[in-house]
Length: 178
Image (cartoon, rainbow, N blue to C red; front, side, top):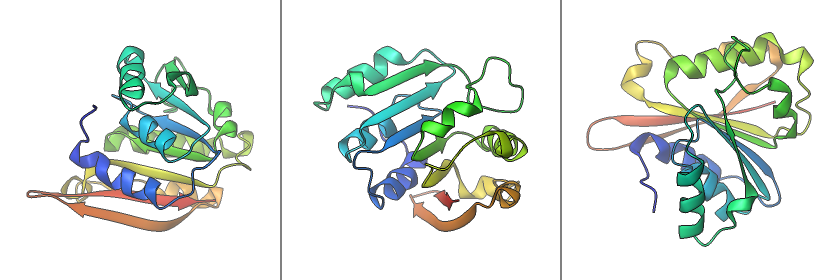
């Protein structure tokens, strides 16, 4: 079974608070695919897992170990959208998403948020119900926070902040909705 990293737990808690039944979930920065597996276990119809490392075999193995159909996970070996537009997932693919989970480091998260905001007019997100933004521990946020303000012109609002503390650091996930 995949390891559930400390910084992933708030994202899992956010997913557990949502109805994912029949939904399409995008898992940006999928890593070992644990969030993809959990999305399927919570009823998602399809998951699109994106990572710049070729982790397809690991994701498929984790799905099988959890009794899930690995065919319900579409893996895309590319970077998440970050403004460079070269070699990254086209933002237009996000039109398929009901839920987007972004579980990456702060700089990558901020690059994604800026790219999404800058190109919001060209991306149809009518199906999008929520984004879960996670992947960093709270003390790192004192050196810079997710640029949630970049989403305001795109009419996203922060609806929840989920904080889970471990022995050393609290970890957070933000839920934003259009």
